[in-house]
Image (cartoon, rainbow, N blue to C red; front, side):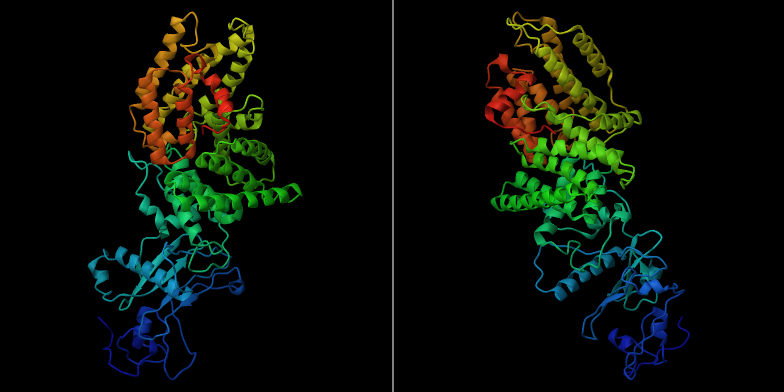
Length: 617
């Protein structure tokens, strides 16, 4: 019940007249404005406004500094239409300004109209979300929302959106945007959501990565139109595509948190180089997946710009400016997967790998390296995955990419604590064995006599036995994602085949070796049985190009070849990484060879013959 009746008047305050509400003409603050905590402005008093809030927060002298939060109002010139106000609470400490916008792919004619439309869209969204409030509250909110108030809490750095209704005496709280709620990276049997969803970037998807680590997100005053004020509409589209498609293609879904969003996107908003590299990666992935002429032009443009910016930052680093050491390290790793997304066949990925290896070792051993606590593990996994899955396709005339002792030592620490990642899944232990198999194979093959027989050294025979026992003893933990476990077992068969094929494949032995042939045939059959237990559309297939290639190089069975061919075709059609297409083309070429030349250890010869060099990452 109101304490006193409201008298109709045509000479009430501007606020009540604009809201088309009754005013009791009590000055300087009428009862309606007092009840709704609004500014009360009168026609006869110019620039005389008073704003009241319950328990206003004290402000310090620093609140007027450029780093303090400021109140910004975007109003409509007409007094008869609702106005929108964005308010940030000032505190005694500097705080990060929260920018929450909606980016669409439709052109915006003017800045003012675009601002009004985007804020109106947000207002509509918030109103729909508050429609389900209790009747005791909703009965007091009978009109459309008057303005949206965005209040940033200093303690939590968590944006909270509130809707102020025309007739509401109170603020209706809307559920806040999640602070660090990473997007679950597993989408079920179907790999990705509809591609149309990648064309619009919503508030929640944009604020997700930005809130993952607020300490990394240093925002200068931004235009309310976009979170990418220095980029055009194409960049917004590419960022949207990255969040909805590319990041899911890079990670295999073994964990609930996708580090390609939760860890790399905050770095991108803090560093223009990382942002440009992610946009280039998104453009390359979109072009590989969609194969449109326009997409090819855009991908080439962003890729060239990212390389140019990367070279400039490298030049600054060489000249003594090491502020961007973290960005360069992350950037070189991003470039590796960009080449994977592009399906590069010129071996560019190996140059990026060598750069990332040295940069990462230096970064992780420097005492003054300012790296977020949760980032080194991901970078170590990133480097190992890229290095190990690329080593098999290295030109024998060139030095293969190597794991530094620092990186390998950190990886063993991760294994000891049961690390599961979005690149190595739960088989990081197997990845560390592959370089040892690679070097052992080349040592043993160097002992081949004129008659084709091998004459390995005793130490190599012992090493062979140790590696075989380590591979056979591997079994994924039962607590991990079931698809990750299946993929790990496929990887296990792939590593076994890689080791056993050092002694030759079944179709290379003359005379035949039944025991060896049966071992390899059983490993191939086991791998196919495991692959049949999960579809090729799942994200876990992102990490399986390497074992599929090894399996394909260890069989001449047309049925097995058809299964692998169909799987790689489905993977490329669903996931869209360019190296999946190149892997299929390479295997199809290998299968046309004489059976004596079909082996994982002949892979580099075939690549040399075709002059193609790419990673199986």
